[in-house]
Image 1: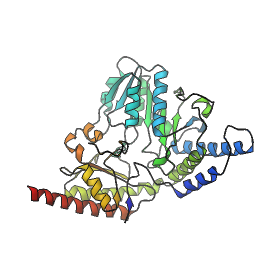
Image 2: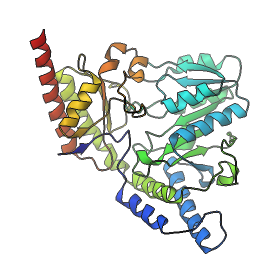
Image 3: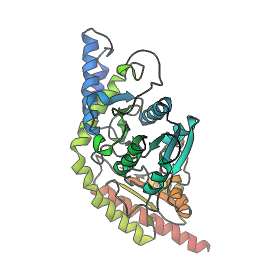
Image 4: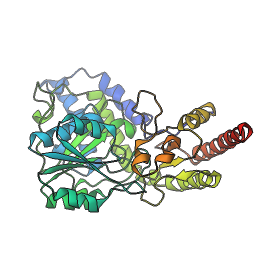
Amino acid sequence: MSIYLDYNATAPVRPEAAEAVAVALVSAGNPSSVHAAGRAARVLVEDARAEVAELAGVKVGSIVFTSGGTEANALAIESARAAGFARIIVSAVEHDAVIENANATGLCVEILPVDGEGVADLAWLAKALAGEGRALVCLMLANNETGVIQPAAQASELVRAADGWLHVDAVQAAGKIAIDFNALGADTLALSAHKLGGMQGVGALAAGPRATLARRLHGGGQERGRRAGTENVPGIAAFGVAARAAREGLDVMAAQAVWRDRLAARVAEAGATVLGEGAARLPQTLGFAAPGYSSELQVMGLDLAGIMVSAGAACSSGKVKASRVVQAMALADLAPYALRVSGGWASSEADWIACGDAWVAAYERHTARRREVA
């Protein structure tokens, strides 16, 4: 038995996306060339741009393709710095791709705290925005570890009133909940293909009319002069197909909330704490912590049972570390014991049930061993 429940790390490539890659790979055209092959490649890129724009709820011309979510976040942050923003406010639960790029600017970085459910403190944000200097505010749409959805639209009202710039990392939210760029009030928004069934190494940044992008990669005039380098045509084509499939499958994704909650009830009954349970969350993400049962042991135990999950963000060179997100929620005592289960486009109810069966059995064995040692 092999069950994959680590979609928040990366989703399996959708069959239709793989087919799009195969079609693009046999095309020899550079999308910047004016001959027939080049024009054909350009069609693939622009068709994909339209699909990704539809997924994010933005105009087609607002999309800039990048090498992934990390570059999209970096492009937004660097653009705000180049535009003269004097400081950066990042939520305490942001992905490292945001936090590290913010720190790299050399600007003052302030941390926006979250409450015990992992939701950003907007009262704190309002006070911080009243300080000196225009601020770039980075607030993710949904957390990668807990699935907690952030009040980005409410934050945008505060940010705009202070003449700030709101950047939303929507990498985890895209394809799992509906996204409306204008309703969010974002100035920039980051996306990644491999989180929703496209290829790894492809992403996009959506930019609104208040944002002026300053390109980080210099060379040719690709992406309307906003990002140099020949476009990754196969990856972009697959991104477009995956974006369309994800948009059309939102109802299927929403149905996983029932499976998530059933698993949550099982682990809670066994003694685990469900993270962010009182907040709005992604329908296919469950974060929980079992005191005394380390994240590493949980991941290993489930892996031996043929079930693949994560201890949190999958961007630490294979290392299992105490969750920074859980620590930010004032639950530092639970941080070493956090686990994340995340489903996706090919997940089934049986997958979630099997995960619960395996976890409960492993936890019972672990607690029995601890009693024997004691």
